[in-house]
Amino acid sequence: MNPVIIESIDHEGRGIAHADGKVIFIEGALTGERVTYSSYRKKNNYEQAKVEQILKQSFMRVQPKCPVFGVCGGCSMQHLEPRAQVAIKQRVLEDNLQRIGKVKPEVVLPPIYGQAWAYRQRARLSVRHVLKKNKTLVGFREQNGKYVADMQHCEILTPKIAGLLPLLGELNEKFTARDILPQIEVAVGEHVDVLVLRILAALTPSDEALIREFADTHHVQFWTQTKGPETVVPFYPLDAPQLSYSLPEFAITMPFAPTEFTQVNSDMNRLMVSRAMRLLKPQTDECIADFFCGLGNFTLPIARSGAQVLGIEGSDALVKRARQNAEYNGLDKNSLSLRGRGGVGVEYRAMNLFEMDETALAKLGHFDKWLVDPPRDGAIELMRSITPEIAPQRIVYVSCSPSTLARDAEVLVHAKGYTLKAAGVMNMFPQTSHVESIALFELNR
Ligand SMILES: C[S@@+](CC[C@H](N)C(=O)[O-])C[C@H]1O[C@@H](n2cnc3c(N)ncnc32)[C@H](O)[C@@H]1O
Image (cartoon, rainbow, N blue to C red; front, side, top):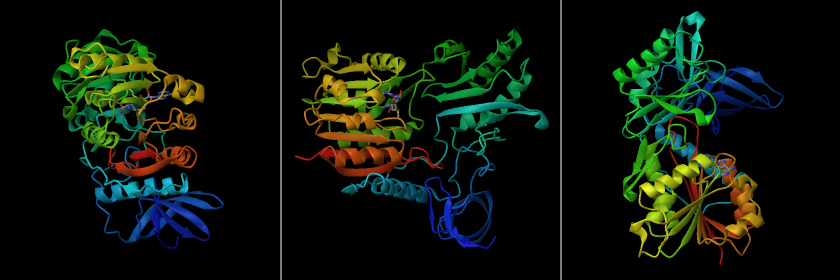
């Protein structure tokens, strides 16, 4: 294959070049590099390829730390200097806003950085006994999605969990049957590391003894899950501290269960909540709605400011957890700490926000400000349901998908009378192509 020059890089970290009238997406190639490549998928107007030889190297290229980089599906940007990763994510955000949303932020916020490695506190690891290798692999799936990557370590998981990967494989080898454990879910808290074993058949007494021994040796707590989420229960030790994370700036501690949604990177989460609060600027006399509130990650910091806040969330379990956490932090509506401050604290409601319409939104009433933090699908139904009567003055939108943020921004700016005041990225997932961002919308007066 003739060498090509990489013109830009796409949102998954692939180099983009043109050859023979086609676009070539080349994994492992960076902007400005001259490379040869081999295509593994050829279509009429594009090809997908892997880099073969780098003839001229980019100054942004770094040596990937991980020996399975390029095979493992966990990261796709390790060959790129971390600050360049953030610059690419910033460009992805701006491109999406412009192309899909036809909007441009008045201010581009400086990106928020965290540590580039060993940040990941949540993960779903696959487990598979591989006959040919005569061992059990525990780790992320390969890029092809079919196989489990053969990883002895992981640079983005917290070091303790990363070090346990081969040992968990050995544990599975010792079980009576090696095919009853397809998945281990990881949740790292401030005082405990939890591993949830997805179990397809009953454990034998000797399996159980092995798990207890592993927990004692490596200071982790095991939970088991036999069927749906309601079957997730602690297994051993039963007297371990509860999983939790904290937001010291707001004097908040958040207990959670290992399969409940929390942000994967708690250091970045603190910075993100802090930035969201600075953009939202909650005031004591305000009423604020926190849509897609989860366990109250933004709701409670808003309430700490003295504003009244309604958190709305689709999962009943998370609403229950959110209510408990409001009480735990003295921020529920009966809390003594709020009496005399004008606020009535926090309330939560379970609601499917993908089914939002004007009538349902009107019933919730008018709020001064909104915080919106949807899953990847975005919040189009919510945005479309805004009428002049209930339109909040300010919306802070936290997004894990620039394309749905851009789509929703288009509605806010071109149909609902808002201005996109500011937008920026937060490097919640270094080494991967995931783009977490935040945007501030203000209603035009
Ligand atoms: C990105 S998370 C944000 C959670 C929370 N704001 C936080 O920072 O931890 C998105 C949340 O949306 C919730 N969710 C997903 N689909 C939903 C729906 N159709 N209606 C309401 N909430 C939904 C999820 O349960 C999850 O808690």
